[in-house]
Image 1 (cartoon, helix red, strand yellow):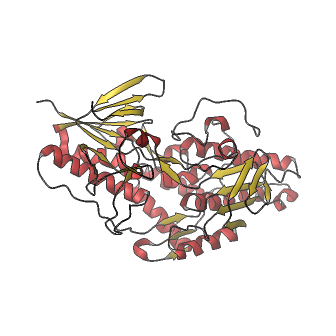
Image 2 (cartoon, helix red, strand yellow):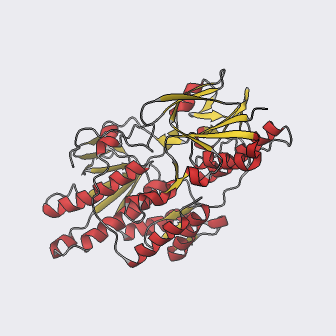
Image 3 (spheres, one colour):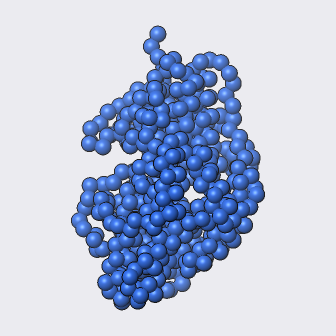
Length: 440
């Protein structure tokens, strides 16, 4: 008998766990194929540390072939899914097209940067969803600090604006401020040491980390203010230009750096399926299968999964839920193929959150216990080491080096601004370099 064909689309937290669970459960009884634009899982929570020189890029890129033995990797980006023919059409990084037939399908395509109808943002802001964006931001921060050292009046180059005070934006502002301030302090020119960088963190909410425990917000705000980060709550961007951003209160902030961290939206691939959606996410049953298509499962940011702990609501788009949904999708799909066992509904209570604020600082509430300072920092990093599916020793080694040595603040020049457009549906891939940007 021919083996069942199982295709997993997306190699993020949900897709990785689904593929690993399927391989362990089904063994050779099924051919499991993972379709992903890259050959690695990107450990997104540590991306701010790549942007600030703490971690090297490969540390947060876990090899899929090494971590998923027995799973076939197909490099490519899904462009269309024909549900009636049970085929996935994709395009690889060199432009060639292909298709994968399936008996069972897992959709775990993840999310991309959330866009708002703010004039100039797409043209002048940088997102933060992939390695190319983190590498570009790292070069950009160093470049602005070096160019501002040449021109005392270039305050716009020493001004950095982060839009969105959620999990990602707060970490970027906290760690970015620490990174650029250390660059200024290490200057041999005494005058340059006094010209500290200016960081602003904006959000329309009334506090930073609005989706988390208020005690985490208080801890994060205290650390941010100690690093001279200006927190502007109930504030949004009205317009972005090449010279700066206009706020909704009428103030214009001259800057060359706008980091867009306002949130995420489901991958646009979901919208092309013609199936019921909930704010762009594919509606699924509690058992993660798609109504009307029992051969299709969806999990992670692409799926609107009923939240059993909050009736009437859907689970939030977090790595914690994506990881557990991926495992359950793999188990339920395997049970359907083997014809034994009962599909289980998704039920998960949040275990708490951990926010790395850079240095030894952090904010965490594991199992609801609020922590701050170095203890929270240690818990946060311990959590990341425990949940990473690979590269743990290398990450720990980089952290030890960070504690003993100053960061290497050098430009590598590998990613240019035109390669990381904010409206990209594939933030994990850099586009072909365009014309030079205004700051290169």
